[in-house]
Amino acid sequence: MKTTARRLGAAILCAALLAGCSTSNQAGGTDETTDASTATSASDGTRMEPTTKTDQLHLAYVPVVMNTSYEMVLAGIKEGIDANGGEEWATLTVQAPSSNTATLQEQPDILEGLAQQDIDAIIMATEDQDAMLPYIEAASEKGIPIFLFNMSTISENDPWYVTCVTFDQYEASHQIGEWAVDHFAGKEVEVAVLEGFPGVVNTQRLEGFMDAIADHPNLKVVASQQADWTRAQGQTVTENILQAHPNVGFIYGLYDEMALGAVAAVKQANKLGQIAIAGYDNTADGRDSILAGELTVTVDTASKQMGTDVLNAVKEFVQEGKEVPREIMIPTTVYDTETIGDFDPNNYTYVPPTEK
Image (cartoon, rainbow, N blue to C red; front, side, top):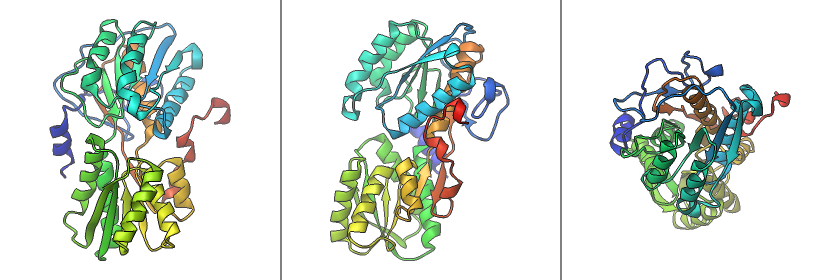
């Protein structure tokens, strides 16, 4: 498996400081480990020291942008707060950049503002950890620990963050490739890939898929084009691909939104049922499309679980005085037309205690 070597080469991965630290699905932050998440270890830890705060916690949530995936992470955080006593236990401030393109311009101001407030922990994701490092350090020096999540790589220059709760972008996409290998079982198939904007995330997802099918020449990639992570571009690019390659039998969008754009284009071309379409992230719209017999397969990246796990880490480090793993990995799962019914749709949204 190339996954470990590739991921270690891309970044210094977060570390486990104590072998017995908790991971996912631990009610109340106990030391019992589960299979829901796994922690890796490395020699260096955070410069921040655990605390044992007993008063109401004041937490801040700073995603890259507020979209479907980050709403799901937020849902896990909010349900975790409910499970620990609600607002009497912790308040939550949400500050999100206004758009993807504004993230790197707005996050510094957000962090500077939070550093001036009575905040006990910041839960954040960023597209450029090195660019944010002065602001992360400034918050940390004021005693505010930073808990990262949904990061594709971790900067070796950042000794301040406490932990990184994430999933393996490469491995999730590799799973889609493995699904394609099994699904087509040696059948000659022309493959098209819809890519997002160039960058680490796009590269890791593309490489994961390509590595999975590399030894299977029956799966021939005839087009791999940028579709900007959006449904509209996914449709436009797919329309062009189908014109140039009318025999395409499998389309993989590196994000569900692009894959759903491909669904629209395939339907318009009256080829639904002739072309298998794969997505990535298992969004609510993606799931609905699979249930409707349109999208064929996607990979769930457990965004809500990510929120649960990062909040558990905050509780352990800030309240219970425990060191926590510097990396907590969330497992990913492929769902297709045969298995999508196994996925609990409550994992998409915040479910208040009264509705459980």
